[in-house]
Each structure stands twice: as C-alpha cells, then as structure tokens.
Image (cartoon, rainbow, N blue to C red; front, top):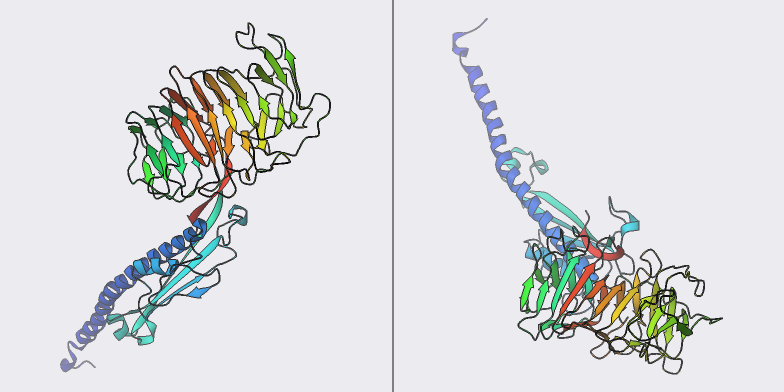
Length: 499
C-alpha cells in the first residue's frame, strides 16, 4: 500500500545518485586531464633525456666533466648535472622528491632489429624512465584513484639508439678542431649536383671551421639532393652542415634551394673506416712497370697532341708514379704506391684509362677501374707521398667499383700517414669518377691530410663521387662541378629515438 507521505522520496535518491555521478564526471575531467598532461610532459622529458644521453655517447662527450655519466644503470638525484638527468630536468622532471628518473642500457628494444643497431660504440641503446607522484582531488575523495590515496603515479619510458643506416656519403671534412678546415680562397665557383640531403659536412668544432677569403667565392647547392641524378636537373637543394661555426655562412654567394646552412651539427664519422687496406702485391711479369704505348692503341688517344703515351700495369710501385713528360694510360687494377714520392702528374699532364684489359695482375677482375693506394716506404712507413695532379691537363680516371670491398675509392691515402698536402689542379678537362679518400685514423693539429682543389679559367674540373678528407681548400678563378652519386650507399651510424 502506498502512503501519500512517501511521495517524492525517489526523486531525492535519484538526485543523490546523479550528484555522485556528476561529481565523478567532473573529477574525471579535472584530475584526468591533469594526469594526462603530466603523462605527456613525462614522455617529453624521457624522450629528451634518452636522446641527449645517446647523443653524448655518439659524440664521445660522456666521459668527462660535470655532465659525464657511467655506462651502467643509475638513478638521477634532484640536482643531477649528468647529461640524461639534466635534460630530463630541463623538461620539468627530476627536481623533486616525488620524481624518480632512472637510466639503463637494455640489450634489446621493441621493434628494433639487432642487425640495425650501430657497432663499434661503447653503448648502442639507452633507456630513460621517468615517474612522478601526482596529487589528485575529487577522484581521491571518491576513492576512484589509488584506493583513496592522495596521489596517482604517472610514468613514461623512452629508448634512444645508435643505429646503422644505409646512406650516401656527403663531402666530408673530418678534422675535429681546426680553424679553416673548409676554406675558399680566390673566386672559385663550386656547384654540387645530386647527392644526399646534406651535401657537405665539416666536423671541426672551431668557431671558424669554415672560412672564405674571397667576396666572390660561390657555393651552389640549389640543385643538390637525392631527387637529382647528378646533372643538376631535378635537385631541390641540400644542406651545408658544420659542427662548429661560424653561425652564419661566410661565403660570397651561397645558394642552397630548399637546403640550409646548419651550424652545431653532430659530426659524421668516417663511413669508410672499415674498408680494408689493399694487400701488398707481389710483382710478377709486367706488374709494377710501364711500357711505351703507340697512339690509338689501348686507350692512348689518336692523334695524341700531348706527350707520348706510357702504359702502366697495376702492382707494387716503390718509386712512386710520376706522369711528367708522358701520358700515363692505366691498366685496370690496384696500384700500391710504397714511396715518399706518391702519385703525381705535372701541369699539362694527361691521364687515361686503358681499354681492352682485365685485371689478372692484382686479382680484382676489374675491366675499367683503378685504385691508387699511397703509403710510405719501408724505411719511412709513415711518410706516404701526396696525390698531386697539375692544372691544364685532360685526366679521366675511374675508381674501384662501388660494389667492391673498396666501395668506389679512387685515391686512398694510408690512414696512418703523416701530414700531407694533396693537390688536384684545374684549368683543363679533369674528370675523376670515384671517392677521394684522404683521412687519418687519428688526427691532431699537425697530423692530417689536406686537399686543395684548384679551378682555373675555362676549367672543366668534374668530380663524380665523394670527398672524405681532413681539410678541404677550394680556390682559383674557375668553375668546379661535383656530381655526387645519390645512389651510392654506405653504412653509417646515426642517433634515433626508437621507443
């Protein structure tokens, strides 16, 4: 039986239930959004700490100073200057007792194949874990979070790695500290077609790593970049990167298209450091010798308006190779030059590739490729001679195949050689297909390989390949074109946030 005095009691119960629901919804909106924001901030802090930590390992700056950190797991303190901790702190975490920041080095990471993780580094995976106790209000009162406790835990994890990637090699100037490591003097016009997104990288940390002594010195990267096949038809531009400075490009005219001048970049390590040194050949038969060659035969031009042709066979050369007063024509193979004289060809010198030969001498099987390796004599093993090609000649040389163990190298200087100055002249028709690789394993302020590329009036200097050298100087008054091979791929290490 229903009594009149009971009318409306259900409305009270519904109102109370609805109020609890509404309060919960409001709490979820207020506290939930706060927790979500804290979670996003924690993730940004973890990402920053992981990338900064692995970058420090990649750059080799983790071992000394207040920012140094160990390669074993550790927990950050509230005022920790160690690199991963400091970057987490810059993003608002790790500075209070309610925060916990840990750094460790996992052996694997989800979604990362061990085949792609960089080798030759002290650690290739670094993980940062950030957690914080975040106070709640309405949800705590309702007992929704933490059983009615006063705080909820937000947590974020980030893993950064040094990974191995396949990428084209830019023009790479490797000296780590020298002022003027990349220098332009006179009024050269340098044009780069094709190649990677970064056409030039200068590793020197000097504030004056890049210098220019000529107001008319020109660098044109407007048609560089992967879309271009190397003929400056479709390139959209590429970057000029430098680890040091200056902060703005110092050249007379600097055109990059969609690229940029990028200071404060991480150095790019020598991508050819693992390429083996050619074995010392054992000369038999014609190996390591040269003979007169008639005009129009085996690659000697006809009519030959220059000096008489001389056919060179691959092998061991203990007295160097000097093309003075002759026109060298090279049979395919490896030329192992064990001499302080090195490889030279004076002004007005012509050089050509021999035709109709297969390298059975040094065992490569090449039919149209050469590799010149400079090292010191047995008496002076570190005194490797220079590569020196004079101006106003016609030179056409093709380096080792990119598919070979020598990865397209044309000129290869002993990595332990004392300082040497190499010169490639201009003013004639010089075409070099292949990598110019003149780099020391260990460089100091006085021990490094320097390369001078000189243009001249009417210059047709064309380099179809890459340049890896301690220091690079570009000069003269003519044009130098560098056609970079956008498809040549080498394995290099780089930093990535992987998880």
